[in-house]
Every structure is written in C-alpha cells, then in structure tokens.
Amino acid sequence: MHELAVTQGIVEMIVDRVRDRRVLAVNLAIGQISGVAPHAIRFCFDLVAAGTVVEGARLHIDTPIGRARCRSCGLDDLVVEAPIPLCGCGSADLEVTSGDELVVTSVEVAV
Image (cartoon, rainbow, N blue to C red; front, side, top):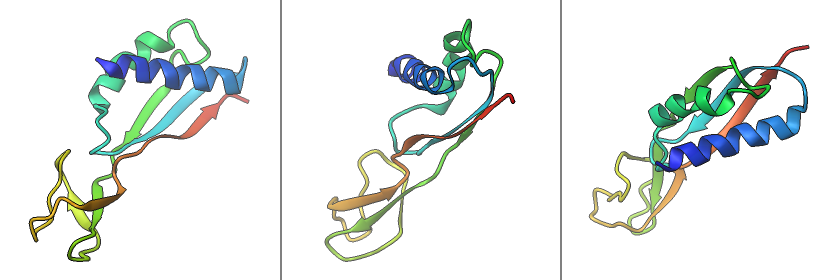
C-alpha cells in the first residue's frame, strides 16, 4: 500500500513547515485518476500523525474528476474516469488537464 508512504510524506512535509504549531486541519486534493486512494489516505492519516503536531487534525479530501483534451480529434473537457482513458473517437492520445493531482491545498494551524 503506497498510500502509507504518501501519507507519511504529507505529514512530514507539514511538520517541517509548521514547526511546533499545532495543526487543526489538513485539506488535500486527490484527483480521481491520480492513482492514490483517498480512503487509504484517511485510514493511514491518524496513525501517521500520532505523536506529531498534526495529531488530532481534521482531514478533508476533495476528489476532482479527471478531465482531458484529445490530441487526435481536438475534443476538449473530456471527462476521464479510467486510468487508461479513451476518447469517443477511439484515440488514447489524451492530454490530462485535471484529476491527476495530489496536492496539500491548505493547512490550518492554531494561533
């Protein structure tokens, strides 16, 4: 489960940046075609955060849908739901424009 390592990386990055300030909330964007399972991140979060300034923080995860542009037919804003997407024209030559992100969008800290 690579989500454990991903969650450890997220928590370590936050701890490095906030130093000794207590974290109240962590907001993530995990795209639906990112290859990262939000439910697994949720499962790992409290375990990884234990004993750090992130312990007890609320975790909110947005899951943007996948979108792409077809390089073959030019169709723009194609909704992508599969890891290996196909356009309606049959082409797999797509440029993913969103939905593959894994981003810490914000962190709320105690004053």
